[in-house]
Image (cartoon, rainbow, N blue to C red; front, side, top):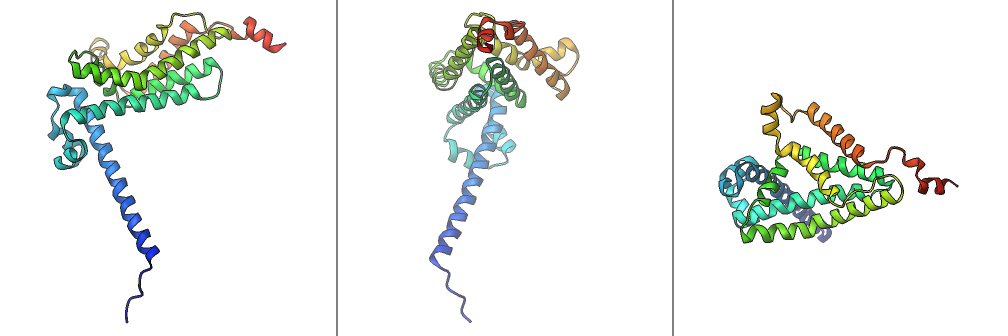
Length: 239
């Protein structure tokens, strides 16, 4: 008995399924390589990072890494692009959400903190790049800052102005936005030093949660007015 002929639509569906499966597999492999490379570059720096260590951690073969990224430098650039892009996506979602200026800024701080806390090696990687003076590093960092950081920075500045106009925030200098980043990031970039000074691991889940609360409280105390509901703007709105 002959097998029934397979229809053209069935063959197309089967082929599309194989392509989709292959595509998802490639995406997982690329993601695994980028995650492993982020860790390796952050710990060892660009010069000290080893491709072999990356492929072992990612559980892929070395040929696949070079197929996707070509060179070690291109892999490093892709790692930085991913870190900056993911950060911008996370914090912009908080800044673009509905809510009052104080609610938006709190959400921004929490999203920023959580992104860093998920992988404390991320800020070390960025900090290392900032200390480099070579032309390639400068061009790369300038491009990343222009593409990902500047739009976020402008939104934060607008939010600080709006919050002041509505009586929720004190008037602060524009560089207050940098202070927010510093308070969030420094704890993680200095974690090894903090452990020596305090004698305790600062990166346990409990201490990270405690630090998250402290960061929000600290910045809020420095920025938020005591009783924003009594500001002239709010009184006018309630009439």
